[in-house]
Structure formats: C-alpha cells, structure tokens
Length: 200
Length: 200
DNA sequence: TAAAAAAGTGAACTAAAATTCACAAATTGA
DNA sequence: TCAATTTGTGAATTTTAGTTCACTTTTTTA
Image (spheres, rainbow over the protein chains, first blue to last red):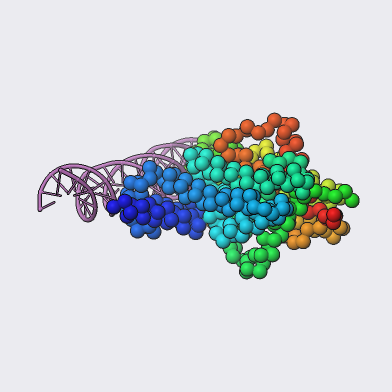
C-alpha cells in the first residue's frame, strides 16, 4: 500500500529528526531511528540508500523551513531595520526551542556528501540575510561596507548565541522572560552593527 | 630517562595538535597520533589515561594561548574601541591561519568530559571580551544594554566567520589582501554593534 | 486462490577505532 | 653484572555502529 509506505518513510524521517533534536546527529543511529519509528533497521534501507540520505533529507528540510520563514520576512513591507530585527528575533527564538537541532543543522560535522548539501542550505540562510542588508544599504538605512562579511557576522552572532548555552549546564538560563529579553538584545546588536553611524 | 619521557609526551601532544589542525578531531586517531609522533599506539596509554585526556590537553592549551593574547589586549592602554578592534582582528587573523583547528576548538562535538573542559576554556574567551566591553560601557564609549549578550554576539561573529568558509570549497576565498580587508570588516562590524548610537 | 512480487525482519557481517595485554627492550640500583 | 623495575611494542580484543541478506509476511494480480 502506497499510503503505508509513505507513512513509514515519514515515520523514519520524523524519528531521525527527534533523535537529532534530543542528542544530535551522534545519537541518531539507524537502530535507534528504526526502533523509535516502529520499524526494523533493515527497512530503513528499503527507503534510503544509506544513513547519509536519511540525514540529508532531515537536515535539508529543517533548514529549508527556516529559510522560508526568513525569506518571508525579507519580502515583507517593513523597513530594512525592522526586517533585520524581525529576522534575527524570529530565527533565534525558533532555534532556542531546540538548540541541539540548531547546533546539528549548523555545526555538527557530517560526511562530505551531507556537508555539501548542508552547505548549500546554509548559504540560503545567509542569502536571505544578505537581501535584507542589501536593500537597507541601498535605501540608506544601513552603512556597513562589505555585504558578504556583514551577513556572515549576523548569521554568526545569531547562530552562536543559540548553541553556546548548549554546553554542560543546560537550561540554567532561560525562563521565558529572560528569553525574550535575550533575543531582543541579540537583534539590537545586529541592527546596531550595520546601521549608519552618525559622526560624533 | 625523564627527558625522553617528556619528549615523548610532547611529541604525542604536538602530533595530535597537528592532526586536528589538518582534519579535525575526527582525524586524530590514536594510531595516527602515535605513528606521527614516532611511537607505538600502546605507549600513548602509558602517558594518558585515554584519548579524551590527550584531546583535553591539546584543546585546553590551544585555547589558553588565545585567551592570553586576548587578555593582553584587554589590559593594554588603548581606548575601549581600539581594544575591541584589536581583539577581534587578532583573534580572527590567527584563527584564519588554521581554521580547522579553530573549528575543533570551538565547535566540534566531543565527549562529555572534554566538552566540560572546553566549555570552561571558551568561557575565558568570552570573559576576555566581556572585560573590554564592560570597561567601554563604563567610560561611555559603548552603548549596548546587556553585557553578556553583547559578548556572546561578538564571540559568535568572530568565530563563525572563520569556520564558515571551511566548508566544501576550501581556500577559494583568501589571498592576503582580501584577508586583511575581510578581517577589518569583521572588527568594524563588532565595534559598530556595541558603540553608542547617536540619535538622528 | 495460488503464484509472483514487494515489503518487512533482525541476526549476522563488516569496518573502524579505542583499548588492553603479554611480551621485549631498556634502565636502574644494589 | 644481574635482578627488578620501568618503558615501549603491536597484535589481539572489544566496542560500536552501519550495512547486508536469507528468510517471513503481506500485498498484488492473473
């Protein structure tokens, strides 16, 4: 039955995604994925050539989703400043809901093939930020010099802040209040960084 | 002979460091480390309890070194702006000389014990930046709101920019000229981000 | 409804890498 | 110099996880 097969396929992908969100790619083993999806390990290989293919699909989809959200903001009717603020805020807030997944998406090492795929996806995130910055530069809201570097720094700041507190003592940080404040600070940092600086 | 043993120990550590700089922690296997150091794999275990201990020593030392350099800048007689500029510039330039090592130091996943150690070291980097920022806030040069977040963003930007171009097509980017320009942009980004913003 | 095809299983196979250990070589100290 | 201790070796063992495959179950179809 077509339908059951599609369900299996999705169950495997979702299971993999959940495991990655919990413990990173290192914890997403075929056995574990299969078990959690309620199928045998062998079956995974009926649906995917190998483990990399499973991961590629999970990671690409997850990043694509974030990219869509960012693009939507980039194409909205806000001022460039507001766009950048919203993009950073949205990205960081979402990422903070599963920081481990964010880490895996952005940083966890993977084999060459997957790395290649992921790189493309990551470029899309940068691309989205770049568009916001480029528009802002043209209309005079932003005053940075090099578009590419500025975008890199923004993406760096907004991803690093999420994964850094991942370390030993999880969850120490955040009740919702702090979280909102924190996110606001990050967005402000990024906006300031690229804003036109008035001479004193 | 004490001396020979110390040499062996150092050879093992250096070998590990070099392998990490070339291909990351994933390529620093006990066999490879031992071979490159000119000793047998078994000997590594006479000097270290296990692989983690080797890596802990390599990574901690490497980060400590960077921290010293940053602290030196933080304690110099420059203005806060100049300090931050110099700190970012220095860190990024140095990191760009072995981006793979920088990645391993900052991001490559490791076991819990090593992660714990590394986290402490990373905190020291942030701490160093924090001191620069805190001083600048007090003397009115800087105008960010939350010290911790600002430091996190700076560290995020300056580490991310180094590791990002690590991906598929290495070395595409940088002849020395571009490199200098690039580094300058990053430092400017960070300084702008925390500088007092004049109202328009 | 019975043969053919496809989906599903999980134990066995493989591979890679950390770690151990029985042994050899070198060093020490009496 | 000879026994005891320490340093050094590397093949064998262990561990962990990906992958295969002979077999079972289910579905399709003629």
